[in-house]
Image (cartoon, rainbow, N blue to C red):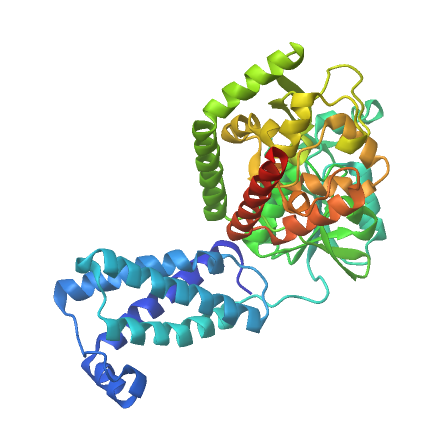
Length: 472
């Protein structure tokens, strides 16, 4: 079974050899002549490259193909059909990219016959290669470790989980040790802390979170069971990201499933965690879109902001902006700014419809209906604390009130909050927290760059129609 860097190395070498070989076969005169036997390809001219032109074509193809196959170089457990479909999509994406490179720069152009034959060859060979070296998903965990941040939670999960456990990896150090534990045996972890070796007597301590990747490789771990008391913290997401990179299944005990996004399908006492971290390309693309959207919006709406500020001052003479502490990603907090739409006194954490709220000012009612009160939040997006699309950031006092009623409310914290989101475009607010949570979780499970674009376009259209209705 391949895992970690071995899988990355072997899968990359195999993909490189197959990509280079595909171009070499497609460039051979005999292969070029075979296209005459297929009616749909009969019109393609037989063109072969040599020397520097062939080397340039191979290098270009290899660079594009390896870039498209990056997600396949992670040792994730996949089914055969899923592997084949994923590789085929990536090969098609690479072919389109190669054709586009040739369109914009003739010196890099791959002859059409060579491109078609190379794509067909890679479409057959690359899926077969990744199927051969893939990791099959296990029905039952084999080699398991527990990862957590609290000794008692780790101890409970180990005792209640009916699977053999190799040991546990923890982030708890001196700050988690009770006064009664002083003097107990302890080990120094690579993350700079000390772990009480008697805190979890039922299993061996394998070290701190800094050793997670090493432990997964050294012990050939198949499954990680999470035992985090605070699963909204970055330690949880860092560990989860490591599991996804290493192709290790991530599970949680069913008693702790309320605060973690799961598949809902149980294997004994364990439930699969259904939060997959984005790869770096998706993060870069989302952040680039956030910056472009915020900068464009601020530049275009500068005159409107000046008019709004003047109207608020003339209305009641109060402050122009309203600041509020809101919950960010991982349960962190940040200060959000909006144009003030209500009188400052008598603020309540209980969610309320605008029609029932008598604290909204005359200008504020117009700003809310046209969504113009949200403009200052573009600065928060620019700073990186918010995104354009994501679960709407709620007031920290409102979060506490809702969380006391809905224990799974923290599932919304698994991504960065947004200016708009799936709940907003469906007209769902915090006055219906159960429905709002359902939409927010649906967004987190299905988030992608193009999903964000669709949500933004629909929100812009809704804002435009709302503004027209208000102005009539």
